[in-house]
Amino acid sequence: MNPTAPLPPEVDAPAMRSEDFDALDDILDDLRTRYDETPQWEFCEGFMAALICCRRLIPPAEYLPVLLGLPTEGEAPFEGDGSFKDDAQIERFMALWTQRWNEVAAALNTPIERLDDE
Image (cartoon, rainbow, N blue to C red; front, side, top):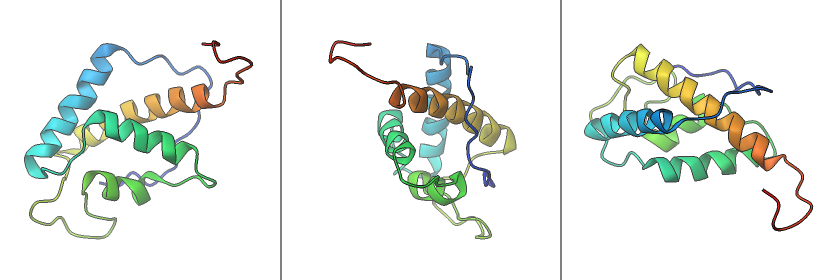
């Protein structure tokens, strides 16, 4: 697990589809087989919103070990950790995570004039 680069903002990121959310849930379910404290997607999305609203950009290498019970960079995997099963799973998770991150960031940066605005 080595997602060290900050998540890049994308101007025209495609919208998440229900299949993408299902894929995220499937990955989290798989992580939960190795670490039963792996949170549900709804918690992860709230965690994401809090990270987006922080005063500084916090890189994935700093927050993912806390969120998912992963070994920190340079730390050997330990029994009961929430390790991803392979590099392909890490890449898929990070692609979906980044896509949703960009959607949430765009929504949070949208000016709202009235309470009934979309």
